[in-house]
Length: 211
Ligand code: FES
Image (cartoon, rainbow, N blue to C red; front, side, top):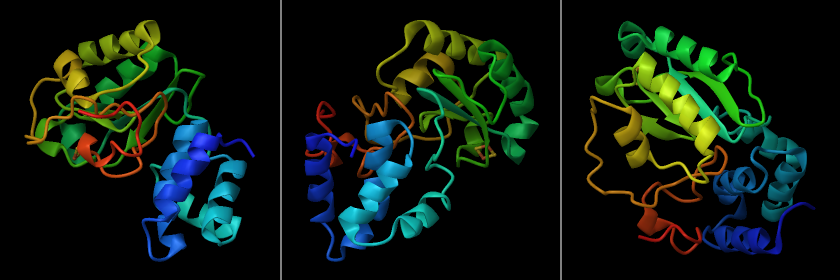
């Protein structure tokens, strides 16, 4: 078992929120990704044991959704949207700049940085757009993409925050998020918070994420 006592306690807290333990599979998978950086066989077995289903059933969920990762993706995963709106606004050039600056081809990862194509991430009005550890940047340019890679490599931020990313590397935006996420960092590896994306929803289970 690789999970810390704290993580196991948090896992039990999550399961207790659901009338059926198996309903907790997806938030527990988020937790497993936060624990190990990706979904290991041990992590998926932990989830299976916690909710009383088989590891194969957990794996079937984990491999259905692209944002669950069953292989290491580095500490920082850059997911570049290459669907139609972003493609028309130069996403291929931005992706090539990311690959060249990082030395990591799309679909691969080194210890620090992973790069991947993503299907539409719902920010077409701010195309071309990408995610870093599932935090959004809209209006990315070739030059800003290179700066982003240098910032990740040299700065090695412990957390990734969408507002900060947008300020440093973005331009045109399509969203007004309404709720400011001062502490919406998700990291230090690609993983969602256990519940929601708004900091106030996660204070109880995400130490250090409070507003
Ligand atoms: S096509 Fe890129 S965000 Fe929709």
